[in-house]
Amino acid sequence: MIYIVMGPSGSGKTLVGEYLKEKGMNELVSHTTRLPRPGEVQGVSYHFVDEGTFQQTKKVEASAYGGNWYGVSEKEVEEKTKLGDVFAVIEIHGALAFKKMYGEKVKIFYIASGPRDLRRRMTHRGDPKESIRKRMLIYRKNGEAFQDRHADAVLVNKSSKKQLFCQVEYYLAATKNRKKPKTDRTVYPSRRKLFS
Ligand SMILES: Nc1ncnc2c1ncn2[C@@H]1O[C@H](COP(=O)(O)OP(=O)(O)OP(=O)(O)O)[C@@H](O)[C@H]1O
Ligand SMILES: Nc1nc2c(ncn2[C@@H]2O[C@H](COP(=O)(O)O)[C@@H](O)[C@H]2O)c(=O)[nH]1
Image (cartoon, rainbow, N blue to C red; front, side, top):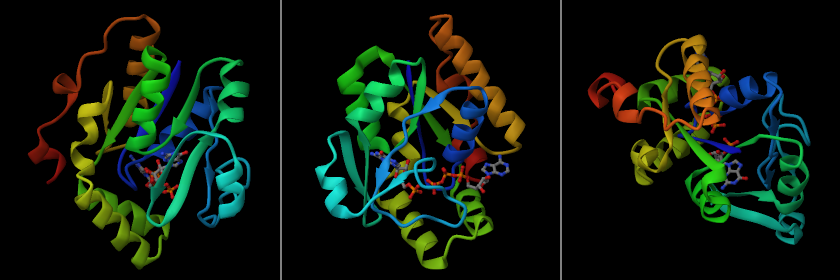
């Protein structure tokens, strides 16, 4: 199984990725031309490369986001899927490219968060003001709040980390048991509640 974690900037994708790694799942580490944030580690957070190297690398998919390139290499997918279930933290176009290529092996998790929480978390993470502004603009312009319609499961990140991880567990169990998970309509709080 290939689990794709997507959602707006600051929604908690990296956090969910860290939880999956703790559980022993391998990550498809993306290539990117963006500069590392403080604390990010080469080859672990991303393969940080220049544009020339990025273009030369054979990739399953590639997308531009916020003025930088992102993509997952073919080598990464070939090597890591041999070892078992994997996950990738990527945006919508990449997620849909994976779904098209690998079909039912791919499950898309969308992490839902309201704009206030997104801004607060990016601020707390220490992102520069200009970067936050750009990402909130992308959130609105790209209609990221509505990308949940492409997901197999919607996780709502509105309170504690524990509550978020419980939802991950629920959906992992559901996909393992080959049961169709309850749709987001059953677990999703009303949009008004999420955006308050
Ligand atoms: N439920 C939560 N409780 C406490 N902290 C949280 C929660 N969800 C996310 N955070 C924190 O908010 C910040 C943003 O989360 P994270 O980095 O996982 O977002 P992201 O979706 O990966 O963002 P980006 O796409 O910008 O990389 C992080 O510092 C993370 O630890
Ligand atoms: N299509 C892809 N999108 C990716 C990939 N790796 C990360 N991403 C997405 O880019 C944005 C910005 O990421 P950030 O680390 O700079 O905050 C975010 O939505 C990621 O999910 C990839 O390989 N392909």
